[in-house]
Every structure is written in C-alpha cells, then in structure tokens.
Image (cartoon, rainbow over all chains, first blue to last red; front, side, top):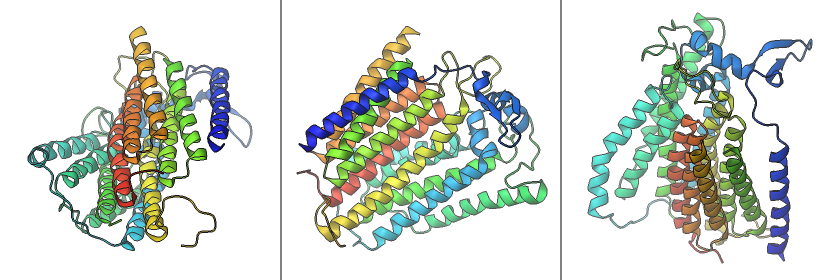
Amino acid sequence: MRKLAGIVIAGIFFISMMMLFYHLPASHDLSSNEYYYRNPINGSVANESIPEHYIKYTKNETGAVNAVTAIVVEYRGFDTLGEVTVLFTAATGVSFLLSLAVRGRKREEANLILKEGSKLVLPFILLTGAYIFIHGHLTPGGGFPGGSVVASGFLLMMLAYPKFFMKDRISWFESAAGTAFVVIGLLGLVLATSFLQNFIPVGTPGQLVSAGIIPLIYIAIGFKVGSELSAIVNKMKEVQG
Amino acid sequence: MIWAMYFAVAVLLTAGLYGVITKKNLMKVFISLSIMETGVNLLLITIGYIPGGTAPIENGNFAKYVDPVPQALVLTAIVIGVSVTALALSLLIMYHSKAGTLEYKEGMKW
Amino acid sequence: MIEFTIMAWILALLAAAAAIYAVETKDLISSAIAMGVASLVVSIMFLLLQAPDVAITEASIGAGITMAVFVYAIGKTGRWEE
C-alpha cells in the first residue's frame, strides 16, 4: 500500500519535473536583458548583466583568472565565511555527539598490498591537494576541492592502517585557518575600506603571486576543509556501535 | 546534451523522493536524501550551462563562457552537504545505541 | 558535438540505474556504494557541462568521503534493512 502510494507520487513528481524542464526558458546568452540587475529602490536597470560583469571584469578587478574562484572568495567572500562557519558547527556537533558514545574498537589488519601501496601513494595525494588549493586562482580548483582531496588522502590511510588516527592537535590547524580567514578580512577593513576587501596589489594576472588576498584566503580554506573533513571521518571511524 | 542532464536530474530527484516517502529505515532515508542533493547540484549547474560555452577561466582564446555564479554556489554546497550528512549520521548512531533499531517509532523517548 | 550527446545520455542512464538500485536494494552497504557510483557519474557530467571546479569537488567528496562516512556508520548500526 505504502509502496503503491510511493510509486504514484513519484510518477506524478517525475512527469511534472519533465514538464517543468520543457517549459524552462532555454539557456540564454549572458548578455540578454533577463539577466539584468534591477535596483529595488528606484527601479533603474543596470546596463549589463551580473554574470557578464563577472566574466568581463574579473581579471581587471581581482587579478584572478578563474572567475569561479573570484566569485567564491572576492565577490561573495562573506557568504563563504558563513559556509565555513556552518562546516565548523557541523564538525563540532559530530565530535560532541560521538564523544558521548563508547570509543575504541578492535579491527583486523588490512592486507600487505593496500598497506604498502597507500604509503607510496599518500605523498602524491597530499601534493595534488596542495597544488589544487595553491593554484586556485589560475586553474580549476581552490580551497574546497583541494581540502577534500587532502581529506581523501587521510581517509586512505585510515582504511589501510586500523590504528591510524588524527591527533587532537589537528584542531589547531582548524582554528588557525579559521582565524587567518577572519584576520585577513579585518585587515581589509583596516587597510582598505570594507571587510574582506583586497589590500594587496593585484599584480599580473596569470602569475602564481597575483590576485592579492585570494590565494591567501584559499590556502586558509584548504587547510580548514581538509582538517575538518579528516576529523569528521576519523570520529566516525573511532566510535563503537 | 541538456536533455540528458535534465533526465538525470529528474530520475535522481524522483528516486530520492520515493526512498524518503516509502522506506522506514532511517539509514535508507539519509541515502535517499544524499541522492536528491546530488540531483539538485546537477540541476543548478545545468541551468547555468550555455551551449558552446567553455569553463569560466579567462585565457583569451574563447569568447563565450558558461555562467560562473551557479558553479560558485554548488562548489560550497557540496562541502556543506557532506558535513551535514555526517552530523545526521552521528545522530543516527546515537539513536541506534539508545533505541536498538534504525526504524522510526511513534512516541519514542530517548 | 554528437559524441558529447551520446556520452551524456550513457552517463545519464548509468546515474539513473545507480540511483534506483541504491534506493531499492536491501543491503545498505551496496546501497551506499551505488550512491557513490551515482556521484562519480554525476561528476563526469559536471565536466561535460564545463564546470571543472565542481567536478573535482564532487569526485573526491561524493565518491570518497560521503561513501566512507556512510559505510562507517552502517558498520556501527547494522547492514541489512528488514
């Protein structure tokens, strides 16, 4: 009965989703009028659309070549600070909840190939993660992908070695990275005009040392995401059911 | 190509919804929610796609880029999604150690 | 362009099959692994949609960390769904 009702509701949902997609406006040129920003107070319309502005002026305004990075760190940096706070809150909640449960559990050893192979591969995974978050303003990537690659490297170690665990000292990295983010933002308030504003010269777009505070903030985010996701996985592994 | 993406979005969302409303096992409900989350991310990226556009990384050779704003939103949403899933699962582990079952019961106190 | 379309349809069908299997199977470990497969396929679709940043994130998080977190949690609570 429950299954039948589920199938009927899911079928109706599927058909209405496909109809919705059929009537969705086809993908536009970014310069079309419908993307234009309308001022809510006096009703005036800007003469360029928001995505078009990002694509045209990212290189000159922020010095970053990758427009996604520029949006995440520079144009919507405050939003990213909020996201990082959500991540921190969730990690704290996980470690609080699981500290109430019983810890410690015997596990059998992994086989030799996994153990030796993961020892061999781990430095390369960490190097790739670091490359991704240092070059966030030049190539695809940045702090969030790089941090998750680093965390998956530690996940490999946890799978291969049952006794491998992250020391509590990892929370130092976490707090240091979060503090660095806020301090860079406050320096923008002091040295420039507003919170998280760029106060370092932009430099030549395309060089490794360019784009002002974007690489600094993305390195901080990379450390924070990496240490927090590793800590979450480690907590889930340590707890006893 | 757009229609293949729309089809995948519709199937992912429908499968997730079906799991959420018919399954009693809470672990299965969380797996279904995770599938729905993947579908929503794919939908946002698909809406921002422009046929013939390239990735929004300025290199001087291409004139047409896809919309970078949904990509920036989804990038953070994925990372938030996994941490919130881990929080839900740790609540579920506590529930299991108190209640001894993974199924939802009316009027449970724990 | 036609080869991208064919590839996109193959990936869409794979993602659909993985998602339906993940919801329907009684074995929760298989369910979590099928969810990871769906995430991995969707990450290749992100690459086709010209979103490389999102593709990297989804590949390492959706297929790696989410699946590991689910498998650890299933190991603590019980493998079979009645």
